[in-house]
Image 1 (cartoon, rainbow, N blue to C red):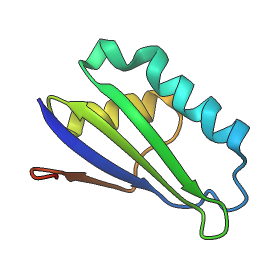
Image 2: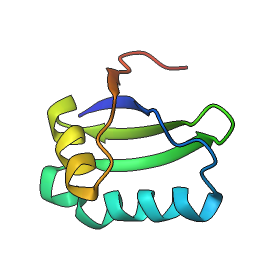
Image 3: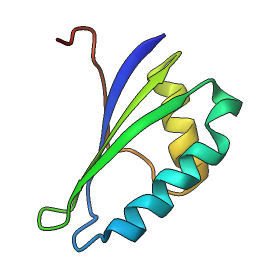
Image 4: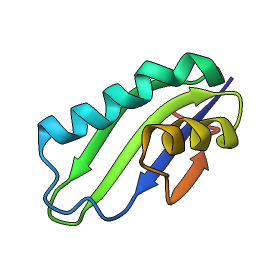
Length: 82
């Protein structure tokens, strides 16, 4: 399985509770696509949200996000980490 970092735009003013709710929506259905969402970060000032996941493909990540109601604007494979 590969690691993916995805980016969402347009979440200016997002709160910790809203970020948790969106993450929980992903986690609730992630197994149906073989995805594991590991962590989410947000910058309320810029409106950017980042999610780290392990998944069989970027398409699987996107399907979960779409079904949860927050399509990713960018999805990047993370082939190397330290």
